[in-house]
Image (cartoon, rainbow, N blue to C red; front, side, top):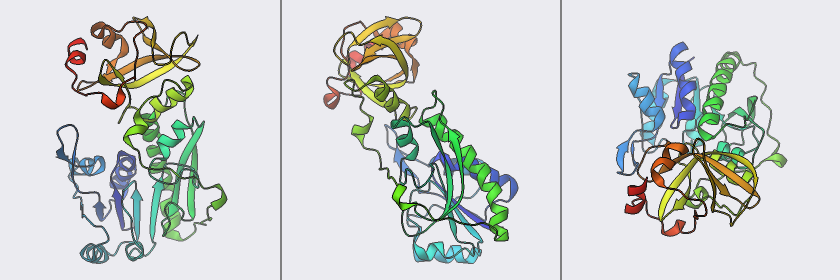
Length: 326
């Protein structure tokens, strides 16, 4: 089968890897390189970087629906277009080029969590299960008929990074199972139940801010939803501090939410939430690498009673006092 594969984030890498091993795509599409990181250096997106490291050519047009792009795709005479977290709209003319149409790998049990952030949304909501859906692309976002679907339990220790990796592997295996049936024309597509549809949105800066006035379980879910990247954050002594891992501590809150309750030198530090405490076990100080909380404590001089998160909007990622102490 002559396939074209389009993707940008790490979610699509396992599927592309499987295709490269079995029946390499005739073309790999991705997003153009963009400035990223603190220094805004031009970088390739994860999937394009992966493919190039393997020596594969990657086509990254600024507009995938441009006439010259459509002409190039027609010349390839593809049977199927496969997309996985590509990050751009594929218009009708493009979707009609492959003889078998276009399909998408989506990390949720559609029609739940349509849109850009299904994995983060499932973790924010404390869901016990997720899954992947392969559906036929149409005019409406993530609303096409379902071709295949498989569930996955969300483990208590899962965060965005680990859950995305597990869902990506599941999507890759489901895709390999589906391709022969698609080629043979034996797949029965089923429409999505619009009455059950829910939607997600792109992340905003404020979504990453921890609110210690919430219940500890909700604070923990926010930490999990954005770890390891981009990382949920609070502030300490005027500088941003990312909280990358934590666990519920069964002690009732003993002070104002956001105050440090207790130091556990071998484990981390407990922070008061609205109801109980949360034990912080991994952090990332501004401008530094990720640290286990005990390693952070050795230099940061955290003390019980000090407050976190009071000045997030005025916080600096380059606070001299914070650099000196951590």
